[in-house]
Image (cartoon, rainbow, N blue to C red; front, side, top):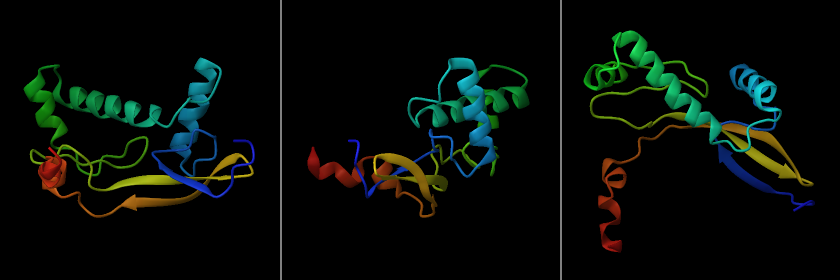
Length: 136
């Protein structure tokens, strides 16, 4: 939509080269150098982050053994990664606190218009699908 305005969406990071985080813009530049364009969607960032976490856990574990790597993942506390710090525990394998950017569109042009951090834990019954059991 060439003249779209007033549209906003939360994203992991900006694919438009205007992310407020240096790490993301460095990643974008490296991506463009390798593939000739910026990432096609913001899904590139959490994909990279998952590999980053796994690689650090493997490095610290000194092995590819699943149980040993999982034990190292569960030690990550406020681990600085591409799109913000991440923490894992034996009870929590998702992120309760994660930074996002808000991409706004004005006159058909996307741009980062703000930032926010998910700051309230997602209730376990929602994560486990118990909250929506009435829909089955």
